[in-house]
Length: 170
Image 1 (cartoon, helix red, strand yellow):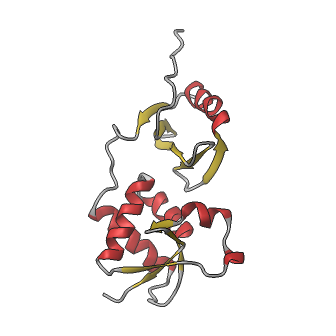
Image 2 (tube, helix red, strand yellow; image 1 turned 180 degrees about the vertical axis):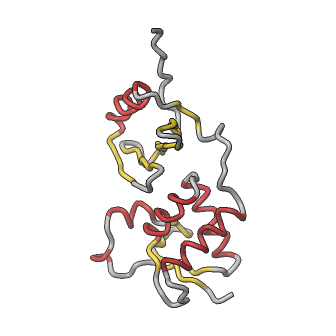
């Protein structure tokens, strides 16, 4: 059996394969110079050292997953569809209350389980909803309450991270 060659990592990737009739996937995204962010179809998120990346990619290849560059992927979750899913998840997590803080970490996870998307699409959609005054982005002022996931999942507005979302009455 011919062995497929693995091209060097050159940016965001999505690895997909069919398992039991369902598409499973994992995305690899740049986090910083030394770390890579991973997320999968179950909404799990984790980071790994960049030095571990090639070994992880080789395991995915050996497991039968196919690599798709995110820029080449048909991005299913764009525009109004993703924005509406964000609002639906925020409504559900906030139990329909406009004054209830919703952690962006939980919102990302909930939306990711329903509608696979790229992180930048989520960030762009949530910022568009903020600009359209459909929701409010806020900082978590209690730094002791912030987890590593909260910090990693924050949406940046200007120079400051936003960790919470509040629904606005429509």
